[in-house]
Length: 314
Image (cartoon, rainbow, N blue to C red; front, side, top):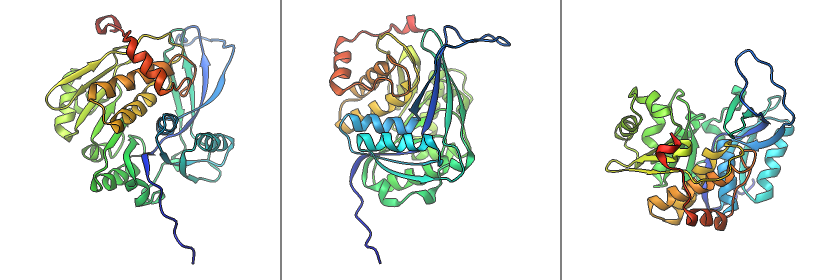
């Protein structure tokens, strides 16, 4: 009988999405019914959770990734990327299934439009995880896609006193059961309104916070940066000015930056500023992991404090 090996302590465990992105730059987004030629395309690695754990690893944190992949070439690329930077992985291989794929159109201003394909067989399940993989971490990052697995992981984390950070994009079955287990809920622009039915974004964010009792609820707003509500005050930190090439992965790196700052014990404003600066630097090159800056590079951008004016960004 084999003796079970002890589980390594890590700073962050991420449970959820990965993807292989085909990025196609275009001078302008195609008009409806038109034909548009493109001159180049790049196959790059992405995915909300996988990108975030890799970024945190590059900043010196010990990280673990839990997810599913197919048995194709894309899966080998992902595994190699995790190995290259030293991310501990627990990945279930699904035979005869394609790994998640995204087609990403990037217009001349760097704004991206994403088309996703995810085989349902790649949906992470609670039985894919072990309790100690979650409870041996200092923080848990989940997405709103693999809700059943995320609920299980967040339940274990809550019981162990581990903070839960969520990356929320679209409303899926189970999201109302996941949110009460989330400490720090960060959503895309349309999520709070869609979930609460409140058309005013600020009021929708307050409603989300009050309904699910998160420590902090936030919404990412592109050039307007991040808007948050903690039950007492609203904080908005505008985005940093950079030469934008591709906004793909900005949210993923923002979440990684928040996790990093949170685990450093920084004040909330500095956590949000670091996350915004990290996201901005990543936008200066193509792909979800285009330019994951070093801690020094991110800090240098923060020190310059060159940001968009919120009224100008709207």
